Amino acid sequence: MKYPFGGFFKGKKILITGHTGFKGAWLSIWLKMLGADLAGYALKPSTEPSLFDILGLSKMMQSKTGDVRNRSSLNAFLREFRPEIIFHMAAQSLVRPSYLDPISTYETNVMGTVNLLDACRALPSIKAIVNVTSDKCYENHGGNAPYKEADPMGGHDPYSSSKGCAELVSNAYRRSYFNQDNYGKKHNIALASVRAGNVIGGGDWSEDRLIPDVIRAYQNKQLLALRYPDAVRPWQYVLEPLYGYLMLAKRLYEDGPDFSGAWNFGPGKKNEKPVRWIVENINKFLGGTLPWEADLTTQPHESEYLRLDSKKAGSLLGWHSRMDLTSALSETVEWYKVWREKQDMYKYSVNQINSYISRE
Image 1 (cartoon, rainbow, N blue to C red):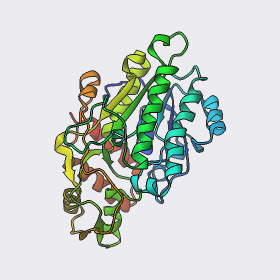
Image 2: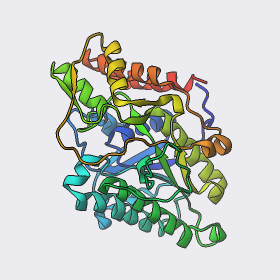
Image 3: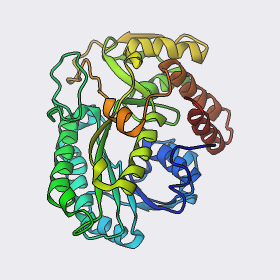
Image 4: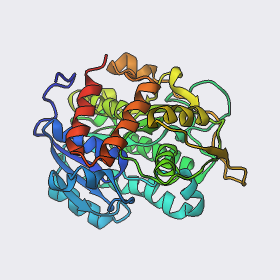
């Protein structure tokens, strides 16, 4: 299989924080396919089952159980492993839990980022850092215009706000400690932050996410309650932004601060659909009819519409969305079907990555 980054990642010492999560597990398996010397630092998987356990990743990489809020533990592991590239994905990643526990959300998403970046200052092995935040980091003005990388940070809810804060932290460290003028003199680190849309794919069992909620309701023959059936979201297959992160990490490593800064990796406009559209189309792939109703109870605020402008990634990295939403839903549902049949999910997931790469 021909990759645009060739054999770049082979043998590279790469650390993923949050590797036990949904996106982290997919990125881990991809990097193992590419021959990386891979390590992860994260809490234990937060769901049962979990993609990390199903893929058997603990046997394929150095996996350290730890909390990014614990500075001493994180520092010790970084000094021990001495990574060259870091993907920072550890986070409290859900809106609704952030309302219930805002302190933990800010501690993890903001101070966890501070702890990581500050530890990196003392490690000469590090060449590139990709800080993964969220499309919700922007100050949502409620309009239909897509958000560009230079738009103001904000956030109505604690989760969104914490991701905006993490972006500000990233920018401050880039200017203060990893700035372009001192690159190659006082430091050799290129730091970027990345923002993606609502990712979908096989192996997600998180609470309060649409696809896992649909799969659980279907398996348990339950009525599905939709909080915001008419809310439009920018849906994208999980491998889409991960592909962009890998492309960016390579350029950061090779070209340094020329590729530092913020990057959007969002889906095209055709992938922006209401929640009800997603459920109705998943029904087709499940081969049945999943009954649902609108949840009319009082719900915490969530954005009605949010879209990213990803022209920068297209023009400077050559990244583009490869997968239409119907295909993404088909691949996602098929993963869960194969898992229920108790097949080799590592092999099947590798095949899905190869299938994705073969797309133009």
